[in-house]
Image 1 (spheres, rainbow, N blue to C red):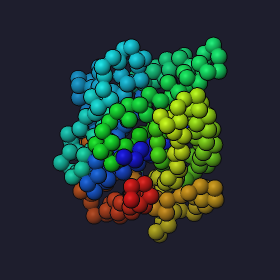
Image 2 (spheres, protein in one colour):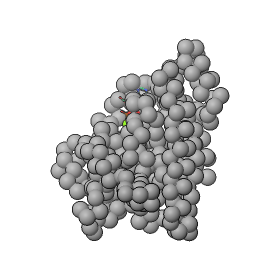
Image 3 (cartoon, helix red, strand yellow):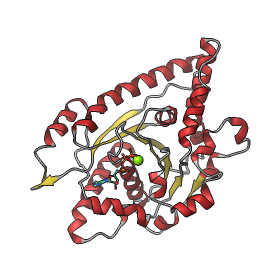
Length: 303
Ligand SMILES: Nc1ncnc2c1ncn2[C@@H]1O[C@H](COP(=O)(O)OP(=O)(O)OP(=O)(O)O)[C@@H](O)[C@H]1O
Ligand SMILES: [Mg+2]
């Protein structure tokens, strides 16, 4: 089972769209896939289930918010109980395509977790840090390791405790970015924040038995450019410098995701990612390009 966080500090760069399409295509290829929505905006959730279904069936007890509550309130809750199989997309895939939904109040959970940090001495502070930052990892470890081939975690555009939970549980980190100044600017900072977090975590783990908590080493799978404007088979000239500059200090996927507002904005209404839809002939190149990116991703992460 491989665990991948999809993250960029920058909002609106295509994280959720990439998560939904990678998950859909891998499930179409026969993999068993679990998506976890860690963003309080719940865009990934609402790309697969309707707001009514969320309100009636999930909001109360069946979202990731329940998992991050203090342990006392969660007595007996199993991580597996949070998993749902969205219906609209089920018939499009041969593998499993499951989801753990998010909750709009997840933002409060982050603040609550922050109040649990600290302690009277260094040892206590480290213990608390591990407890608060390992909630998601503990949940994932509860699952039967054969249940899923891959877990894709859609992160919010921040570096809060819930996001750190995702990174510390991950084998790989996938960074979607728009080829513009602001979206690419944060990538180096993200890399160094991840390195510092992993370093701190591994150091704090030394207070525990090494066999039970081995050091972690999440790898950057790479940067995938999204919403790329193309002319004559190439990214337009104004964005090429940002792609070239990012390649100088990062692993960048060869394939990119092209811009098409209509196609991508309508997918959540249908509950089926673009890559699984029967799109018009004129749009098929967009799907082929995404498929090629997922070939690259699959080779890196799953094969
Ligand atoms: N390749 C694309 N071409 C055109 N529009 C796109 C593309 N990918 C995503 N979009 C649109 O851009 C908007 C933002 O995309 P998305 O929600 O995937 O980004 P995000 O990084 O997850 O955002 P947030 O930081 O808010 O979570 C959405 O309206 C989506 O439909
Ligand atoms: Mg998102």
